[in-house]
Length: 448
Image (cartoon, rainbow, N blue to C red; front, side):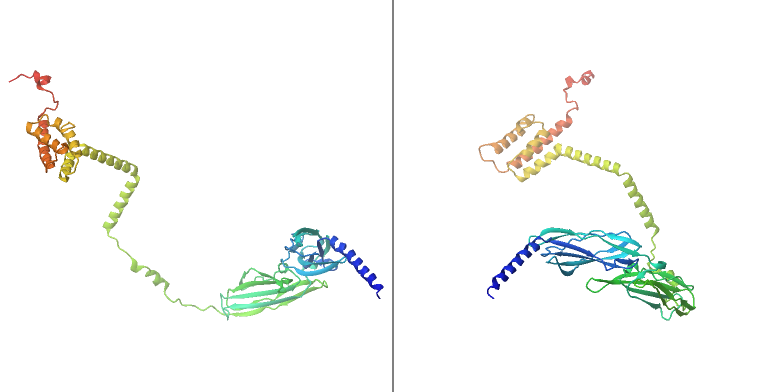
């Protein structure tokens, strides 16, 4: 026993060393595509193309599947959720996801499925990996007699809905036909033959197409509901005929059909419904209490105001130009008034009453009234009393001795007398202001 133990350990070690390179050398991503056994289909049936994406480690991101487009085949891509699968290849264990493409051929012939390239990130280092499946072929047989081939079970039902019930002329009957087929896409189910019927006005509705699943995203089949509203145009007994749906069994190739029975309806005359109110009287009284009577004078004033606004709007450039001119004239008149002697005289009177320490307003008035910048020059042409008053005012304003009380009031009284004298002399002087001996017109006159 002890002699065989070293040999057994050596054999196990050799097997482990031989298996390690095999797992290490295996590709990190393996993609396999398969179709159902036989690879034959009929137009209108649905095939399941299973795509297995497996790796020796694990996926750090979901695999990126390719888009599949086949001529003459309606392809439904996977829903995004894969089925967990495990397999062993060449002694290496693989695990991954199985995705299902639904292939619904619409024409007979041979269809080739190209190689499907899948990329993913695998392993602890998020290593990028890619692989492709082998191309596949399958043959599509034509539908006999143009009838769709249904490989699974097909159930057909119908329903009638009346509004109102019992039916009257002008009411409607809604006929619904529901088809449920296994292994067939809902959009490949044929429409139910809901044709026009005498005595009814038909209004077709949009069909409701639904994909049936197993609750986990797996494809089971399709459902189609066709509806039409039949409006009764007359009273009496009206009937909707039976409807027959035909298809071909995809497994045995035998034609099948199912007849849905019709139904007869007793349509009563529509009752005369009295309106709850008189429409004519209501229209006659409509807004009668909201009538307004406007005096004619208001209309005249409104028309006049509208004309005035229109004239203002049409002549606005001229109106604006006139307003600008009036404003400029007012500003010039104000400037002339402030530059005149009366305005400065009033300013000096206000300054004299305030008993301020300056004589700025007085000297501005003096320059305009006498034409001299100082009091001595302005009173040089007046009498000695005026000159004495000016000298006293200068001593009180600028002298070293303290100013006497009330000197501004005395200057104001004196300036009033000076103003009277200057205005009298200005009025008596001739307009030209020349002496008589220098006036040629006066010199030419004979003296009396």
